[in-house]
Image (cartoon, rainbow, N blue to C red):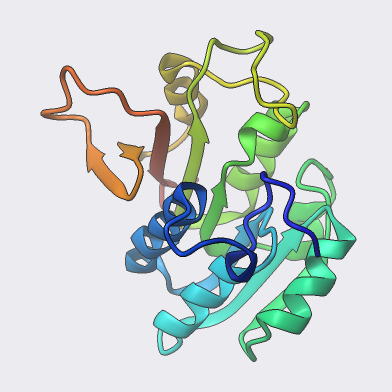
Length: 208
């Protein structure tokens, strides 16, 4: 699989590549929540699914890792095989996913929202596929807002901070974190700093 500048392929990138380090930081951040059934939504080359499976193998029952790109999934199966992981070609806005895949204890989806035309179905799929009491960890880069142009050729748009936060009103608990490079920290104390990426950690209500 070729490195295009957007897809993260660790072995084809320099160790200090900023994009690679950002993605590694998000997956390591998510290990704390890893247990039971895990869905890696838009898993790309599969390295992050492997990170979680290796780090939390005693707590994880299985990892379902999906991506719309058949080449990426074929690469993931060859490079990042792990007995706990099932790599599959799927579209994250397919409305049949909740019925076919069931529910998960943890859903992670990093740098996906900015690529999705049908944001409503994407977010509904995540909510429906999350078990009551389960956790979703979702990240996206901030930008000019929904429907506004972006300099990134593969992005539909980039949400504002407010638009991003408004996506999670159905959840019982939501914590927002902010990322710059490998630094991920909560909102307090961030005045005067620019954080290009937002991360939401959302817990679904137990009665949902």
